[in-house]
Length: 241
Ligand SMILES: Nc1ncnc2c1ncn2[C@@H]1O[C@H](COP(=O)(O)OP(=O)(O)OP(=O)(O)O)[C@@H](O)[C@H]1O
Image 1: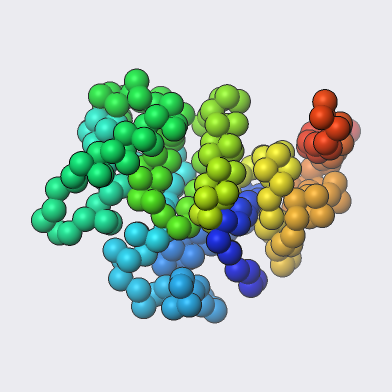
Image 2 (image 1 turned 45 degrees about the vertical axis):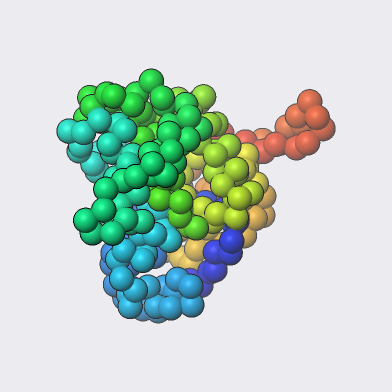
């Protein structure tokens, strides 16, 4: 597969469990060596770039349950600033201010003194997003960022993704909910188990035929009109016989 993520572009990766979405994200970040081909960042092979440089350009939010911190939420978020600091430097006023703003934007100020390990899965997820955002990356990669979140927080994260894109930040995120790709009107990459992935606009790629092919289940794509006249598509998996 071949694709480019331009400034301010949002791409959503969809496909069945185990098809390789996380593996692709880890390869893009240079954690894994590609079996074939090249991942370029700023026109340079990512494998030739120092880890710290990559961390200052790409923020990563892994799938939940991959982190354990006996630190306060505030301290976990501040850790995200490390890629901008010298080896012996301590976070300064500017770093604290960025962390403060991010706590506010994500509406998690009340969690600041709580110990990360004692938070609920959804709360931990939002803190990990905050930790990536304080890096001020030009490119944010998120692996199922809304998987543990209630509807309110799912929408909050999707709005943040749209806001980041408007600010010129590129976002690549995996999801098991095609509705999110429709809501954000993003470009999607739909993976199949035994075929080349399909890349394009959500409305073109996420058809009933393609979704059934990808997930092996009948999925209805329902079109409805919003109050403002705009069209919204939503997916409903069918039980079948
Ligand atoms: N470290 C590893 N060593 C060996 N195989 C691995 C490793 N990590 C993942 N795999 C395998 O690679 C395949 C792709 O896994 P990956 O996690 O990329 O899938 P995914 O599409 O992200 O799945 P999900 O939607 O369930 O998160 C799976 O078969 C998985 O078992």
